[in-house]
Image (cartoon, rainbow, N blue to C red; front, top):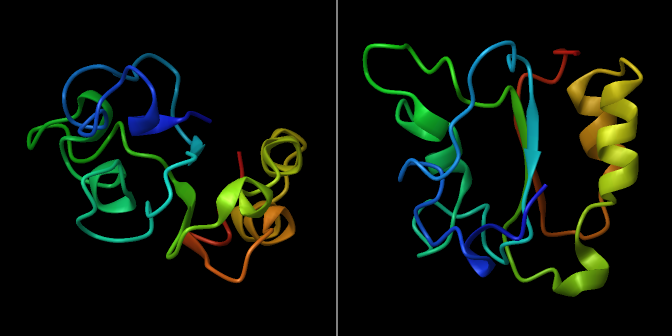
Length: 122
């Protein structure tokens, strides 16, 4: 979980080399607090950057190996009360629940979007 572009990471943080996953970091999920991270081109970090071949240190030769398996995002400004419940989202994931259960139960806004394989579990 991150403030994403609202932090020192900048707008293109998924692809600019700031955050690079490696080692045994497979099967991970993401949540950020960007207002419009559910849009394709927002000037903020968004789900298309997260799931790109260059996301989080990947490149066209690694076949998306650093991308998340699931992400929660917003299609409109959720304000802080509408941000997903991170403790529930990540807590359910850590307990072995599938992505659909984690994402849906963390939802706090009608402007919610879940992207990923619903049946994936940690």
